[in-house]
Image 1 (cartoon, rainbow over the protein chains, first blue to last red):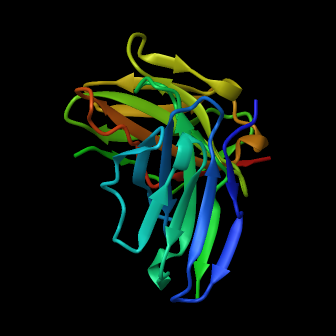
Image 2 (image 1 turned 135 degrees about the vertical axis):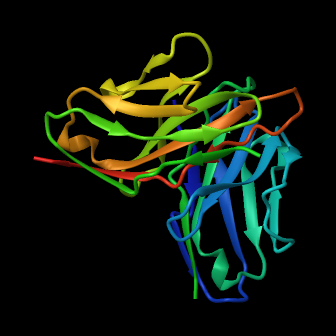
Image 3 (image 1 turned 45 degrees about the vertical axis):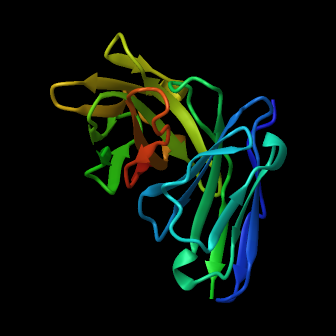
Length: 114
Length: 117
């Protein structure tokens, strides 16, 4: 069974540019989550999709971040325009329906904003 | 609000010795507790979880964790450490609350485990 995949693995951009991260969840997982880890601190929740609907986006830091999940399959997270403080590792995770099901994480995208 | 504390940034242990990685939590309801491990340049891998029932949970690679409700702790343990266990370990919690509420995990800051040969 293929795991959660993320693209790109690394991205280096300049402040003010736009970056789009992609996540492909495990097939059949309706729940998709985005998290990020900044400067070696805690992994922080960004948002949660159930199929194509945003269930919870309380962790999105500001309106420079836009997440989509068209068709309820893969998801994209766009940062526009990027700021220095957006640097970090962005993780995607997916899970089955029940709230006790564990989340399966992708390898992450390391974003560096210069 | 829920929170997780991993009081040790770094834990060093000799190969063959038992290891413990500490985790305490705070939630307003009954918790679901998880341990994940991150190897270099890899994503987080699920190790084990506590949902309900037996307080001692067994997981992958010989790891286990003990849920202690009175101390609000969920320490990760292994009887005999291997060099290959060296990695970054994260504890996470999600509260068992009414349907429709948030399902996100709240993570601790991580503990770097180094097993010395």
